[in-house]
Length: 160
Image 1 (tube, rainbow, N blue to C red):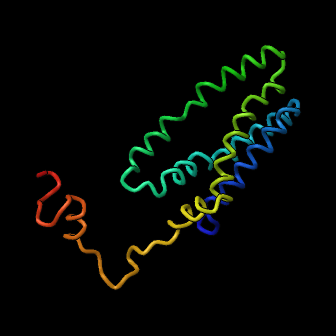
Image 2: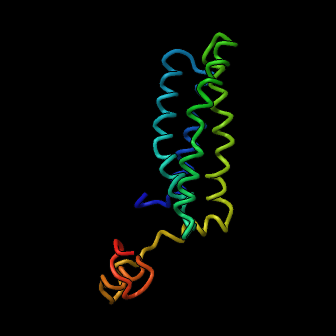
Image 3: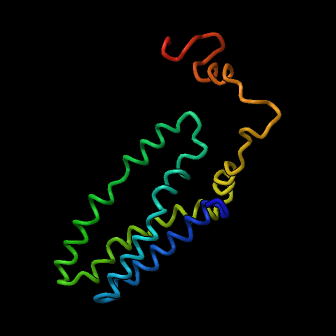
């Protein structure tokens, strides 16, 4: 993501997830396993990117936002039993791959939003440039401690 905007990388990888999950619905034997391995490959970057894009611009609410994102991960607990029940019903795992596909298609709204909804895309891109260490002023330890503790001359963080 050093050379491309994270939101575009996220869109590309999530598109790969949907393509290979859809292929897994109709694929059989080794082709189906290969498709599922490719789904896992494309998923690898999705959660970290969802997390970092999801907490951008939250300011003082970053801790709460990150807690909500982490706490909202219920797919791993809910979807496998649904997939298993569907596979048992059809007596075949292939058609059951449609269950996670439904959830992936619903989740696809986030990469679409961060890429094509202009205000959200601008928010995501607004944090790509950093000015830390590039200015004429050096790092001021006292100033940093004052910001961390809430005021100049307050003392160490442990004393508060």
